[in-house]
Image (cartoon, rainbow, N blue to C red; front, side):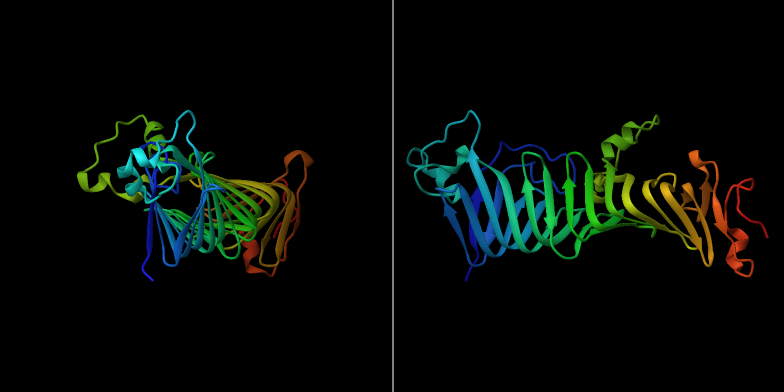
Length: 320
């Protein structure tokens, strides 16, 4: 069966703010489906089935089934299709009302969901996108959000707040940066900085981009600003495994700070305390006493890794 085509007129066209996954920006949504599209006027929704695809500006959603919920535009009356047949032909919707007076506020995708922009790619079994809040929530198996700078995975659910430049991963959440730095926890909250904000933070004038680079999607992708971790936090370096209850990682500095039941494990050696500082660029981990005033350590003399096990010299539990 040939794909069925439908164009839903939505909000007035607006320029996209970034190259991220943002369905709340742009003009109409172009929907195609292999098996058919059903327009349920009483329920105010459109259902596309079979290799369904929705495209709005630079964002594409593919799934086994797509459901788009629409409503009347606020303060705007719909134009009867009979008085404006050209618009009815353009939208592909016929009936009592022309779709130019409607707007989509929610999109649901079911089965083999893929959502991608020129820079970002999210995948899962099911996704719900709230256009009012500009937030997407994905659930199912093998949840993954891939950007040019990092990969975020989760077991329970994955939230993507495009306009807030924030992603939340829950359940065995892991973020791996492009240079192989890894942070895991029950919940991870990743914040990015859009390119415009990056430029405003520097005092140096920004040179004009060449024409070829101006449209480079990688240049427009958000830079990872920080990652907040909650519950069973784990950070791995080439030599250490550092765990704690909570943590914050700042990629620019490469520093991660963990607090609460902190433990540094290197080979058979272990240090325990209230706070740890991990430099993921150098691989050096430091245990800090915090408010408790003491740290504890188990140093195995015959373990070759104990030579470089880092702790404040005055507080270390043992020496070789």
